[in-house]
Length: 290
Ligand SMILES: NC(=O)c1ccc[n+]([C@@H]2O[C@H](COP(=O)([O-])OP(=O)(O)OC[C@H]3O[C@@H](n4cnc5c(N)ncnc54)[C@H](OP(=O)(O)O)[C@@H]3O)[C@@H](O)[C@H]2O)c1
Image: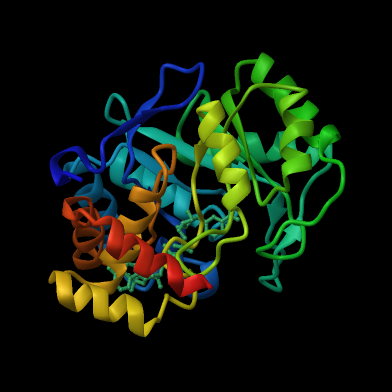
């Protein structure tokens, strides 16, 4: 792996969109609990500008982060957007005043969500929209998503969305979406310790579709493992860097969107691309989940 290329590049299938494999997830830029403004909005702006200055050209967001706050910070930090920056957003949830996460899946909800994203990001069309299935929290739950994907495919035909992905899905839901439209990425919960999607990832690799793990560092409860710490000490890197490098080695269609509110952590995360893991070390890390 080579830091200058941020893990190399990946082209979303049947699109002109090519990104570095190491990107950035913007959820951590909202206030505590992904609600309201951050304590230090200037610091949030600085993280985004540092990411783009370092070569990041894939930013993951949603208008329900904040709500609206994260997209507004992205706009403040980066608009007019540099050529080649791919902003990926998601629809399927809303945040009522009690700060909970509720489904927003009617045709009206989805259409309004597209317009909220366009307005708050300052765009005429959204590069990629993931339909985020609420399922059972951070795990998928079976059930048809055909109606919602059909609505989004219609918004795509109207030119408001360029490409579609799905998030928090089962293999059956992915197949259902693919029967309706071209799906360019899947965003599910996956990391060193949480490995339910191995078979799904193998199938996506064969199809050239991006797999973008959410919670690559463990999310709200960052990964902790004595094996991970021991490997990191041995290699002279930080545990979070080893966790990201493991994902980069796992499969060439895995794209990373680690989230952080700190420029120091951002730099550490991007430097994970410098780390080459031997087959023996990869096997040792694989053992963490067993
Ligand atoms: N599709 C979905 O349902 C879904 C769900 C969740 C998230 N997402 C997306 O996925 C992205 C990534 O997920 P995430 O941000 O929730 O979790 P994550 O990337 O797994 O971890 C973020 C946590 O790790 C900490 N961290 C980051 N870099 C670190 C480092 N180098 N050393 C130590 N701690 C570090 C962050 O704290 P600091 O701020 O202090 O660095 C934060 O607490 C999100 O930003 C969002 O865009 C999507």
